[in-house]
Image (tube, rainbow, N blue to C red; front, top):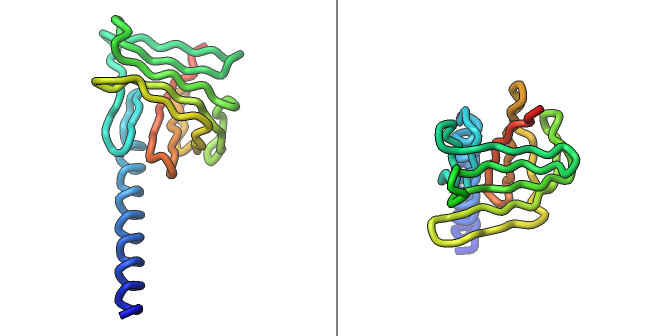
Length: 134
């Protein structure tokens, strides 16, 4: 009986790990600035109706609709500059009904292309794509 319980536990952990890896892969394949939370896109930047902002001094990235009804703000502990880099962030974003936040969220740089950076949190299952605007 104990052995069956152990096998079930291992199976659940393996399946959960596969699901997390699929979410991370799907996030990394997304080309635009966005925020993904738990496998769903919470914010998707559309050039015709959204704005981007960046502050190097505050290490802050913002993306928002022209009406400010939807947005995310990410304040990072350091600027993301290399693949595999780990940093922490304070993140605020909107949903359909409320404004949510996460403090001290650990993120890893999982992709870099030009001025665009993909950041992923395994623990939070949160993906964040930002652009360093100069």
